[in-house]
Image (cartoon, rainbow, N blue to C red):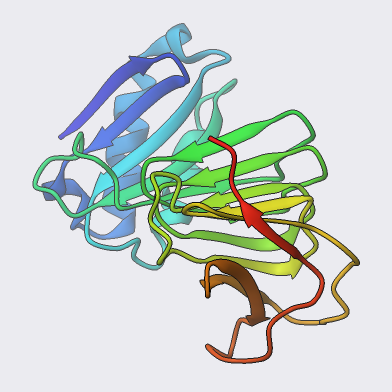
Length: 213
């Protein structure tokens, strides 16, 4: 029910739908047992855990983190969930834990949720929507394959540059908002509104343009 595959970005730990549907404690126990059979092979490994599930249930993130903590030297790249019947299908949503530093890029073929900041010089890109729980101070892309209906959410919006589909905008003055904001494509350009509202006035903090390919 758990497969481990090597990739150019580290290891993928694939959790089959039969296990992913169980209680968090069962998932933790199974992951611990599987990881402990790998011995020194996992020392220094970067891993991404992917579960064949329609959503990330409460407690599963903690279960995965506790299981990985039982194996020294392992670092977590992210957690993904997918709705297909097998865990090695393309993920619908991926989760990245930690800040994205200058010079670092985190990308996803799905919707990407970042629990942290995108620092100046860092880059986050998603084919789907992009959610950043902290501050966006670097580069951000949603709808990376041209889907202009996608959105970028950030706890604090102060990007160097953002792109949604083919629309691109460069950052200007820092946002005066104290809450989360949402960037959307509107009339061919990018507008930013308070995240709790789907409407609002167009931001004057960004200059509109077309993305370079």
